[in-house]
Amino acid sequence: MNQTFIFILTSFFVAFLIFSFSSFLNLRLTYSKEKASAYECGFDAKTSSRVPFSMQFFLISILFLIFDVEIILISPLPFLSYLSMATYPMMMSNLIIFILSLGLLHEWNEGSLTWLN
Image (tube, rainbow, N blue to C red; front, top):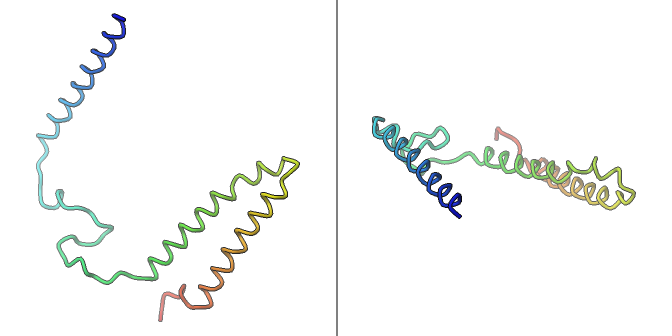
């Protein structure tokens, strides 16, 4: 019981020391308007926030996220191929790839992936 109390007291003391040291270092920093403003993906924070955003860039980023999730879902399949019942996961992965390929083909035919109008 005594060792537990000493351990907890020491842990709080070390945490207080680290917190005090970080607060002391923070006081030495000089603040400026540029450092205090938020960095918004390369956009200037001092201009209007109603600047039109490129829909093509948004679409490409969404497609990247969708295919990134697909890779995460399909990546364990080589490990499942050693099992005797590997036909069901392979069928499901083929279905996922087929649905995503149909969606990509539809967006391509629609002209959503072209950068120039």
